[in-house]
Image (cartoon, rainbow over all chains, first blue to last red):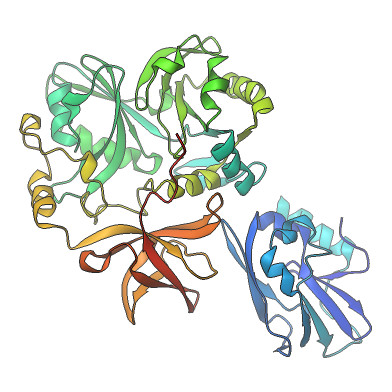
Amino acid sequence: MYPQGYRYSKDHEWIAVEGDRGRVGITDYAQKQLGDVVFVELPEVGRRLAAGEQFGTVESVKAVSELYAPVAGEVVEVNGPLADKPEAINQDPHGAAWMIVLKLADPKAPGGLLDAAAYEALVASESK
Amino acid sequence: MVPFGGWDMPVEYSGLIAEHQAVRTAAGLFDVSHMGEFEVAGPGALAFLQRVTANHVAKLAVGQAQYSALPMPTGCPVDDIILYRRGPERYLIVVNAANIAKDWEWLRSQVPSGCTLEDQSEAFALIALQGPKAEAILQGLTPVDLKAVAFYRFAEGSVCSHQAIVARTGYTGEDGFELFLAPRDAPAVWRQLIEAGRPQGLQPAGLGARDTLRLEARMMLYGNDMDETTTLIEAGLAWIVSFDEAKGDWSGRDVLLEQKTKGASRKLVGFEATERGIPRHGYPVFQGDEQTGSVTSGTFAPFLQKSIGLTYLPAARAAVGTELAVGIRGRRIGARVVPTPFYKRPR
Protein backbone atom coordinates (compact mmCIF):
# COMPACT_ATOMS: atom_id res chain seq x y z
CA MET A 1 0.00 0.00 0.00
CA TYR A 2 2.62 2.58 1.07
CA PRO A 3 5.65 2.63 -1.27
CA GLN A 4 8.80 1.47 0.51
CA GLY A 5 11.04 4.14 -1.01
CA TYR A 6 8.90 7.08 0.14
CA ARG A 7 9.15 8.95 3.42
CA TYR A 8 6.02 10.08 5.28
CA SER A 9 5.08 12.97 7.57
CA LYS A 10 2.73 12.78 10.52
CA ASP A 11 0.52 15.25 8.61
CA HIS A 12 0.02 12.52 5.97
CA GLU A 13 2.18 13.87 3.18
CA TRP A 14 4.68 11.67 1.36
CA ILE A 15 7.95 12.62 -0.27
CA ALA A 16 9.90 10.59 -2.84
CA VAL A 17 13.49 11.80 -2.85
CA GLU A 18 15.80 11.44 -5.86
CA GLY A 19 19.11 13.23 -5.59
CA ASP A 20 18.45 16.74 -4.35
CA ARG A 21 14.79 16.72 -5.37
CA GLY A 22 11.67 15.37 -3.72
CA ARG A 23 8.22 14.77 -5.19
CA VAL A 24 5.43 15.49 -2.67
CA GLY A 25 1.84 14.33 -2.39
CA ILE A 26 -0.73 13.20 0.20
CA THR A 27 -1.12 9.64 1.35
CA ASP A 28 -3.83 7.15 0.62
CA TYR A 29 -4.94 7.43 4.24
CA ALA A 30 -5.28 11.23 3.86
CA GLN A 31 -7.40 10.97 0.71
CA LYS A 32 -9.65 8.40 2.36
CA GLN A 33 -10.18 10.69 5.34
CA LEU A 34 -11.08 13.57 3.02
CA GLY A 35 -13.40 11.71 0.71
CA ASP A 36 -14.09 12.92 -2.84
CA VAL A 37 -11.64 15.73 -3.59
CA VAL A 38 -13.09 18.52 -5.74
CA PHE A 39 -10.53 21.34 -5.48
CA VAL A 40 -6.80 21.60 -5.04
CA GLU A 41 -4.75 24.79 -4.66
CA LEU A 42 -1.01 24.55 -5.21
CA PRO A 43 1.80 27.11 -4.93
CA GLU A 44 3.75 28.86 -7.68
CA VAL A 45 7.12 27.58 -8.84
CA GLY A 46 9.89 29.44 -7.02
CA ARG A 47 8.25 29.53 -3.60
CA ARG A 48 10.58 28.67 -0.72
CA LEU A 49 9.06 26.55 2.01
CA ALA A 50 10.19 25.80 5.53
CA ALA A 51 9.61 22.30 6.86
CA GLY A 52 6.01 22.12 8.07
CA GLU A 53 4.97 25.27 6.20
CA GLN A 54 1.59 25.30 4.45
CA PHE A 55 1.95 25.10 0.67
CA GLY A 56 -1.65 24.61 -0.46
CA THR A 57 -5.07 23.18 0.28
CA VAL A 58 -7.23 20.32 -0.87
CA GLU A 59 -10.97 20.41 -0.50
CA SER A 60 -13.42 17.57 -0.62
CA VAL A 61 -17.17 18.07 -0.57
CA LYS A 62 -17.17 17.64 3.19
CA ALA A 63 -13.85 19.08 4.38
CA VAL A 64 -10.89 21.38 3.81
CA SER A 65 -7.37 20.16 4.47
CA GLU A 66 -4.14 22.12 4.41
CA LEU A 67 -1.01 20.79 2.78
CA TYR A 68 2.32 21.03 4.62
CA ALA A 69 5.82 20.73 3.27
CA PRO A 70 7.38 17.58 4.76
CA VAL A 71 10.86 19.13 4.44
CA ALA A 72 12.33 22.55 3.63
CA GLY A 73 12.95 23.41 -0.01
CA GLU A 74 12.11 25.44 -3.07
CA VAL A 75 9.17 24.57 -5.32
CA VAL A 76 10.68 23.72 -8.72
CA GLU A 77 7.72 21.95 -10.31
CA VAL A 78 3.95 21.96 -9.79
CA ASN A 79 1.47 19.38 -11.03
CA GLY A 80 -0.67 21.96 -12.85
CA PRO A 81 -3.09 19.56 -14.57
CA LEU A 82 -4.16 18.25 -11.14
CA ALA A 83 -6.35 21.34 -10.65
CA ASP A 84 -8.57 20.15 -13.50
CA LYS A 85 -8.76 16.53 -12.35
CA PRO A 86 -8.60 16.65 -8.55
CA GLU A 87 -10.30 13.23 -8.42
CA ALA A 88 -6.87 11.81 -9.29
CA ILE A 89 -5.99 12.46 -5.63
CA ASN A 90 -8.54 9.81 -4.67
CA GLN A 91 -7.59 7.46 -7.50
CA ASP A 92 -3.80 7.50 -7.45
CA PRO A 93 -2.57 9.48 -4.43
CA HIS A 94 0.96 8.00 -4.43
CA GLY A 95 1.49 8.32 -8.18
CA ALA A 96 -0.24 10.53 -10.75
CA ALA A 97 -1.58 12.87 -8.07
CA TRP A 98 1.84 14.15 -6.94
CA MET A 99 1.53 17.85 -6.14
CA ILE A 100 4.90 19.58 -6.14
CA VAL A 101 8.60 18.87 -6.59
CA LEU A 102 10.90 20.47 -4.02
CA LYS A 103 14.60 21.22 -4.45
CA LEU A 104 15.66 20.15 -1.00
CA ALA A 105 17.34 22.68 1.25
CA ASP A 106 19.21 19.79 2.87
CA PRO A 107 19.48 16.85 0.46
CA LYS A 108 21.28 14.65 3.00
CA ALA A 109 18.56 13.40 5.32
CA PRO A 110 14.91 14.34 5.38
CA GLY A 111 14.79 14.28 9.19
CA GLY A 112 11.78 13.59 11.34
CA LEU A 113 10.01 11.57 8.66
CA LEU A 114 8.69 8.04 8.88
CA ASP A 115 9.47 5.05 6.70
CA ALA A 116 6.63 3.02 5.23
CA ALA A 117 6.41 0.58 8.15
CA ALA A 118 6.37 3.34 10.77
CA TYR A 119 3.79 5.28 8.79
CA GLU A 120 1.54 2.24 8.48
CA ALA A 121 1.77 1.81 12.24
CA LEU A 122 0.78 5.48 12.71
CA VAL A 123 -2.20 5.07 10.41
CA ALA A 124 -3.24 1.89 12.18
CA SER A 125 -3.20 3.70 15.54
CA GLU A 126 -5.18 6.69 14.15
CA SER A 127 -7.80 4.41 12.60
CA LYS A 128 -8.64 2.80 15.92
CA MET B 1 -19.30 7.57 11.73
CA VAL B 2 -19.97 10.95 13.35
CA PRO B 3 -22.07 11.98 16.33
CA PHE B 4 -25.23 13.74 15.12
CA GLY B 5 -28.15 14.72 17.33
CA GLY B 6 -27.17 12.10 19.88
CA TRP B 7 -26.75 9.35 17.26
CA ASP B 8 -23.74 7.82 15.56
CA MET B 9 -24.41 8.29 11.87
CA PRO B 10 -22.44 7.36 8.76
CA VAL B 11 -21.26 10.38 6.75
CA GLU B 12 -20.72 8.20 3.73
CA TYR B 13 -20.69 4.58 2.64
CA SER B 14 -19.03 4.15 -0.77
CA GLY B 15 -18.32 7.86 -1.26
CA LEU B 16 -20.34 11.02 -1.05
CA ILE B 17 -20.37 11.90 -4.74
CA ALA B 18 -21.22 8.37 -5.90
CA GLU B 19 -24.07 8.26 -3.37
CA HIS B 20 -25.32 11.69 -4.45
CA GLN B 21 -25.32 10.71 -8.13
CA ALA B 22 -27.02 7.39 -7.35
CA VAL B 23 -29.94 9.28 -5.79
CA ARG B 24 -30.20 11.63 -8.80
CA THR B 25 -29.97 8.87 -11.40
CA ALA B 26 -31.18 5.66 -9.70
CA ALA B 27 -31.85 5.47 -5.96
CA GLY B 28 -30.29 5.84 -2.53
CA LEU B 29 -31.23 4.42 0.86
CA PHE B 30 -30.87 6.54 4.00
CA ASP B 31 -31.24 5.57 7.64
CA VAL B 32 -32.89 8.64 9.15
CA SER B 33 -34.15 6.98 12.31
CA HIS B 34 -32.70 9.87 14.30
CA MET B 35 -35.70 12.03 13.34
CA GLY B 36 -38.24 12.52 16.13
CA GLU B 37 -41.94 11.62 16.04
CA PHE B 38 -44.73 12.98 18.24
CA GLU B 39 -48.32 11.85 18.10
CA VAL B 40 -51.11 14.36 18.68
CA ALA B 41 -54.55 12.81 19.13
CA GLY B 42 -58.02 13.52 20.40
CA PRO B 43 -61.00 15.76 19.68
CA GLY B 44 -58.87 18.83 20.42
CA ALA B 45 -55.99 17.82 18.12
CA LEU B 46 -56.96 19.92 15.11
CA ALA B 47 -57.52 23.10 17.13
CA PHE B 48 -54.23 22.56 18.97
CA LEU B 49 -52.26 22.03 15.76
CA GLN B 50 -53.89 25.06 14.11
CA ARG B 51 -52.59 27.14 16.99
CA VAL B 52 -49.02 25.79 17.21
CA THR B 53 -48.17 25.21 13.53
CA ALA B 54 -47.90 27.71 10.66
CA ASN B 55 -49.71 25.85 7.90
CA HIS B 56 -53.48 25.30 7.49
CA VAL B 57 -54.02 21.94 9.18
CA ALA B 58 -57.71 21.71 8.21
CA LYS B 59 -56.62 21.26 4.61
CA LEU B 60 -55.09 17.90 5.45
CA ALA B 61 -57.06 14.81 4.49
CA VAL B 62 -56.41 11.53 6.28
CA GLY B 63 -53.40 10.03 4.48
CA GLN B 64 -51.94 13.41 3.62
CA ALA B 65 -48.75 15.13 4.82
CA GLN B 66 -47.88 18.80 5.10
CA TYR B 67 -44.59 20.66 5.46
CA SER B 68 -44.93 23.18 8.28
CA ALA B 69 -43.18 24.83 11.22
CA LEU B 70 -43.66 25.52 14.90
CA PRO B 71 -43.64 29.33 15.05
CA MET B 72 -42.90 31.44 18.11
CA PRO B 73 -44.66 34.76 18.79
CA THR B 74 -41.71 36.40 16.99
CA GLY B 75 -42.59 34.55 13.76
CA CYS B 76 -39.35 32.57 14.00
CA PRO B 77 -39.51 28.77 14.06
CA VAL B 78 -38.80 26.54 17.04
CA ASP B 79 -38.43 23.86 14.36
CA ASP B 80 -39.59 22.90 10.90
CA ILE B 81 -41.75 19.80 10.75
CA ILE B 82 -43.78 17.48 8.59
CA LEU B 83 -47.28 16.80 9.80
CA TYR B 84 -49.01 13.53 8.82
CA ARG B 85 -52.75 13.05 9.37
CA ARG B 86 -53.19 9.38 10.29
CA GLY B 87 -56.85 9.49 11.31
CA PRO B 88 -59.74 11.92 11.77
CA GLU B 89 -58.30 13.01 15.12
CA ARG B 90 -54.80 11.56 14.93
CA TYR B 91 -51.64 13.27 13.67
CA LEU B 92 -47.93 12.46 13.59
CA ILE B 93 -45.40 15.32 13.78
CA VAL B 94 -41.92 14.54 12.47
CA VAL B 95 -39.31 16.84 14.00
CA ASN B 96 -35.55 17.33 13.70
CA ALA B 97 -33.43 15.04 15.86
CA ALA B 98 -31.48 17.88 17.44
CA ASN B 99 -34.74 19.58 18.47
CA ILE B 100 -36.69 16.68 19.99
CA ALA B 101 -36.30 17.82 23.61
CA LYS B 102 -36.87 21.49 22.79
CA ASP B 103 -39.96 20.81 20.64
CA TRP B 104 -41.35 18.48 23.28
CA GLU B 105 -41.13 21.15 25.97
CA TRP B 106 -42.54 23.77 23.63
CA LEU B 107 -45.57 21.67 22.68
CA ARG B 108 -46.16 20.00 26.05
CA SER B 109 -46.56 23.36 27.79
CA GLN B 110 -49.36 24.28 25.38
CA VAL B 111 -51.37 21.06 25.11
CA PRO B 112 -55.02 21.73 25.95
CA SER B 113 -57.44 19.26 27.48
CA GLY B 114 -59.13 17.04 24.90
CA CYS B 115 -55.82 16.35 23.24
CA THR B 116 -52.87 14.07 24.01
CA LEU B 117 -49.25 14.53 23.04
CA GLU B 118 -46.97 11.50 23.01
CA ASP B 119 -43.27 11.23 22.15
CA GLN B 120 -43.06 8.19 19.84
CA SER B 121 -39.50 8.82 18.68
CA GLU B 122 -38.33 5.51 20.16
CA ALA B 123 -41.19 3.65 18.52
CA PHE B 124 -40.15 4.46 14.95
CA ALA B 125 -37.20 3.73 12.76
CA LEU B 126 -37.24 5.77 9.56
CA ILE B 127 -35.77 4.65 6.24
CA ALA B 128 -35.78 6.97 3.23
CA LEU B 129 -35.68 5.44 -0.25
CA GLN B 130 -35.07 8.28 -2.69
CA GLY B 131 -34.49 8.57 -6.42
CA PRO B 132 -36.16 7.99 -9.79
CA LYS B 133 -36.04 4.19 -9.30
CA ALA B 134 -37.53 4.33 -5.80
CA GLU B 135 -41.06 3.42 -6.79
CA ALA B 136 -40.00 0.49 -8.97
CA ILE B 137 -37.74 -0.90 -6.23
CA LEU B 138 -40.27 -0.51 -3.42
CA GLN B 139 -43.25 -1.80 -5.41
CA GLY B 140 -41.75 -5.28 -5.47
CA LEU B 141 -41.71 -5.37 -1.67
CA THR B 142 -45.09 -3.92 -0.72
CA PRO B 143 -48.76 -4.63 -1.49
CA VAL B 144 -49.45 -0.88 -1.26
CA ASP B 145 -50.29 0.48 -4.73
CA LEU B 146 -47.57 3.11 -4.87
CA LYS B 147 -48.94 4.76 -7.99
CA ALA B 148 -51.96 5.70 -5.89
CA VAL B 149 -49.75 7.38 -3.27
CA ALA B 150 -49.23 10.91 -4.61
CA PHE B 151 -46.54 13.38 -3.51
CA TYR B 152 -46.98 14.24 0.18
CA ARG B 153 -49.51 11.46 0.62
CA PHE B 154 -48.99 8.26 2.57
CA ALA B 155 -50.49 4.83 3.09
CA GLU B 156 -50.52 2.56 6.13
CA GLY B 157 -49.60 -0.92 5.01
CA SER B 158 -46.65 -3.23 4.96
CA VAL B 159 -43.17 -3.46 3.47
CA CYS B 160 -41.47 -6.87 3.37
CA SER B 161 -44.43 -8.12 5.44
CA HIS B 162 -43.64 -5.65 8.24
CA GLN B 163 -46.11 -2.98 9.26
CA ALA B 164 -45.13 0.42 7.88
CA ILE B 165 -46.25 3.92 7.07
CA VAL B 166 -45.28 4.45 3.44
CA ALA B 167 -45.03 8.18 2.74
CA ARG B 168 -44.12 9.87 -0.53
CA THR B 169 -41.95 12.46 1.17
CA GLY B 170 -38.23 13.14 1.31
CA TYR B 171 -35.31 15.54 1.63
CA THR B 172 -33.43 15.11 -1.63
CA GLY B 173 -35.43 16.83 -4.38
CA GLU B 174 -36.16 13.45 -5.96
CA ASP B 175 -39.22 11.27 -6.03
CA GLY B 176 -39.12 8.76 -3.21
CA PHE B 177 -40.51 7.37 -0.03
CA GLU B 178 -40.00 7.51 3.69
CA LEU B 179 -40.84 4.32 5.56
CA PHE B 180 -41.81 4.50 9.22
CA LEU B 181 -41.13 1.10 10.78
CA ALA B 182 -40.90 -0.56 14.16
CA PRO B 183 -37.19 -0.44 15.11
CA ARG B 184 -37.01 -4.25 15.36
CA ASP B 185 -38.21 -4.60 11.75
CA ALA B 186 -35.97 -1.94 10.23
CA PRO B 187 -32.74 -3.96 9.74
CA ALA B 188 -34.54 -6.67 7.77
CA VAL B 189 -36.36 -4.11 5.62
CA TRP B 190 -33.08 -2.27 5.01
CA ARG B 191 -31.33 -5.46 3.87
CA GLN B 192 -34.17 -6.51 1.58
CA LEU B 193 -34.37 -3.06 0.00
CA ILE B 194 -30.62 -3.07 -0.64
CA GLU B 195 -30.81 -6.52 -2.17
CA ALA B 196 -33.84 -5.74 -4.33
CA GLY B 197 -32.51 -2.35 -5.39
CA ARG B 198 -28.88 -3.12 -6.10
CA PRO B 199 -29.49 -4.37 -9.66
CA GLN B 200 -31.20 -1.04 -10.36
CA GLY B 201 -28.34 1.03 -8.98
CA LEU B 202 -29.52 1.53 -5.40
CA GLN B 203 -26.78 2.51 -2.97
CA PRO B 204 -26.82 3.15 0.78
CA ALA B 205 -26.30 6.88 1.30
CA GLY B 206 -25.04 8.80 4.32
CA LEU B 207 -25.46 12.16 5.99
CA GLY B 208 -23.00 13.80 3.60
CA ALA B 209 -25.04 13.07 0.48
CA ARG B 210 -28.24 13.90 2.32
CA ASP B 211 -26.87 17.39 2.93
CA THR B 212 -25.66 18.02 -0.63
CA LEU B 213 -28.88 16.62 -2.12
CA ARG B 214 -31.15 18.74 0.03
CA LEU B 215 -29.12 21.87 -0.68
CA GLU B 216 -29.24 21.39 -4.47
CA ALA B 217 -33.02 21.22 -4.05
CA ARG B 218 -32.92 24.30 -1.74
CA MET B 219 -34.46 22.41 1.12
CA MET B 220 -33.46 24.11 4.32
CA LEU B 221 -31.61 22.77 7.32
CA TYR B 222 -32.83 23.94 10.70
CA GLY B 223 -29.96 25.41 12.70
CA ASN B 224 -28.17 26.53 9.51
CA ASP B 225 -30.67 28.20 7.19
CA MET B 226 -33.28 29.06 9.76
CA ASP B 227 -33.41 29.19 13.51
CA GLU B 228 -34.95 31.13 16.37
CA THR B 229 -33.67 34.44 14.92
CA THR B 230 -35.06 34.16 11.37
CA THR B 231 -38.73 34.58 10.60
CA LEU B 232 -40.54 32.19 8.30
CA ILE B 233 -41.10 35.01 5.79
CA GLU B 234 -37.38 35.92 5.76
CA ALA B 235 -36.57 32.24 5.24
CA GLY B 236 -38.76 32.15 2.13
CA LEU B 237 -41.34 29.93 3.80
CA ALA B 238 -44.41 32.11 3.17
CA TRP B 239 -45.82 29.13 1.27
CA ILE B 240 -46.19 27.14 4.49
CA VAL B 241 -47.72 30.05 6.44
CA SER B 242 -51.51 30.32 6.41
CA PHE B 243 -53.37 33.52 7.22
CA ASP B 244 -56.71 31.88 6.39
CA GLU B 245 -59.46 33.20 8.68
CA ALA B 246 -60.62 29.62 9.29
CA LYS B 247 -57.28 28.79 10.89
CA GLY B 248 -57.99 31.28 13.65
CA ASP B 249 -55.29 33.11 15.58
CA TRP B 250 -51.94 31.48 16.18
CA SER B 251 -48.55 32.21 17.61
CA GLY B 252 -46.59 34.59 15.37
CA ARG B 253 -49.44 35.38 12.97
CA ASP B 254 -49.40 39.17 13.44
CA VAL B 255 -45.66 39.55 12.94
CA LEU B 256 -45.64 37.34 9.87
CA LEU B 257 -48.70 38.98 8.32
CA GLU B 258 -47.08 42.38 8.67
CA GLN B 259 -43.83 41.10 7.12
CA LYS B 260 -45.70 39.48 4.29
CA THR B 261 -47.69 42.65 3.59
CA LYS B 262 -44.91 45.22 3.99
CA GLY B 263 -42.00 43.02 3.01
CA ALA B 264 -39.25 41.69 5.26
CA SER B 265 -35.99 43.63 5.55
CA ARG B 266 -33.89 40.62 4.60
CA LYS B 267 -34.39 37.39 2.74
CA LEU B 268 -32.70 34.06 2.23
CA VAL B 269 -31.35 33.70 -1.31
CA GLY B 270 -29.39 31.16 -3.26
CA PHE B 271 -26.07 31.96 -4.93
CA GLU B 272 -23.54 30.18 -7.06
CA ALA B 273 -19.81 30.76 -7.12
CA THR B 274 -18.38 32.27 -10.30
CA GLU B 275 -14.82 31.38 -9.30
CA ARG B 276 -13.19 28.26 -7.87
CA GLY B 277 -13.75 27.53 -4.20
CA ILE B 278 -16.33 26.07 -1.86
CA PRO B 279 -18.45 28.40 0.26
CA ARG B 280 -19.13 26.75 3.60
CA HIS B 281 -21.37 27.42 6.60
CA GLY B 282 -20.34 30.62 8.40
CA TYR B 283 -18.13 32.12 5.67
CA PRO B 284 -18.74 35.90 5.22
CA VAL B 285 -20.66 37.28 2.22
CA PHE B 286 -19.71 40.70 0.85
CA GLN B 287 -21.39 43.25 -1.40
CA GLY B 288 -18.69 45.72 -2.33
CA ASP B 289 -16.59 46.18 0.80
CA GLU B 290 -19.48 45.65 3.15
CA GLN B 291 -20.22 42.30 4.73
CA THR B 292 -23.96 41.91 4.23
CA GLY B 293 -24.42 38.29 5.19
CA SER B 294 -22.82 34.95 5.85
CA VAL B 295 -23.20 31.57 4.25
CA THR B 296 -25.89 29.55 6.04
CA SER B 297 -25.30 26.42 3.93
CA GLY B 298 -22.77 25.96 1.17
CA THR B 299 -21.22 23.11 -0.74
CA PHE B 300 -19.80 21.88 -3.97
CA ALA B 301 -22.93 20.53 -5.68
CA PRO B 302 -21.97 17.14 -7.11
CA PHE B 303 -24.78 16.85 -9.66
CA LEU B 304 -24.65 20.48 -10.82
CA GLN B 305 -20.84 20.49 -10.73
CA LYS B 306 -20.59 23.95 -9.22
CA SER B 307 -20.38 25.59 -5.82
CA ILE B 308 -23.66 26.81 -4.37
CA GLY B 309 -24.95 28.24 -1.14
CA LEU B 310 -27.63 30.10 0.76
CA THR B 311 -27.31 33.43 2.58
CA TYR B 312 -29.52 36.09 4.11
CA LEU B 313 -29.16 39.44 2.31
CA PRO B 314 -30.82 42.85 2.72
CA ALA B 315 -34.04 42.53 0.71
CA ALA B 316 -33.24 45.59 -1.41
CA ARG B 317 -29.92 44.03 -2.51
CA ALA B 318 -30.95 40.44 -3.04
CA ALA B 319 -32.33 40.33 -6.59
CA VAL B 320 -31.37 37.49 -8.92
CA GLY B 321 -28.17 38.49 -10.73
CA THR B 322 -26.74 40.50 -7.82
CA GLU B 323 -22.96 40.12 -7.64
CA LEU B 324 -21.45 38.97 -4.34
CA ALA B 325 -18.13 37.86 -2.94
CA VAL B 326 -17.62 35.05 -0.45
CA GLY B 327 -14.68 35.17 1.94
CA ILE B 328 -12.87 31.84 1.85
CA ARG B 329 -10.09 31.57 4.42
CA GLY B 330 -8.76 35.06 3.84
CA ARG B 331 -9.39 35.45 0.10
CA ARG B 332 -12.55 36.30 -1.80
CA ILE B 333 -14.26 34.52 -4.66
CA GLY B 334 -17.02 35.91 -6.86
CA ALA B 335 -20.60 34.69 -6.60
CA ARG B 336 -23.98 35.66 -8.00
CA VAL B 337 -27.55 35.45 -6.69
CA VAL B 338 -29.43 32.83 -8.71
CA PRO B 339 -33.00 31.51 -8.78
CA THR B 340 -33.71 28.49 -6.59
CA PRO B 341 -34.10 25.57 -6.37
CA PHE B 342 -30.65 25.09 -7.85
CA TYR B 343 -31.79 21.67 -9.03
CA LYS B 344 -35.25 20.63 -10.13
CA ARG B 345 -35.86 17.04 -11.08
CA PRO B 346 -37.09 16.27 -14.59
CA ARG B 347 -40.71 15.12 -14.65
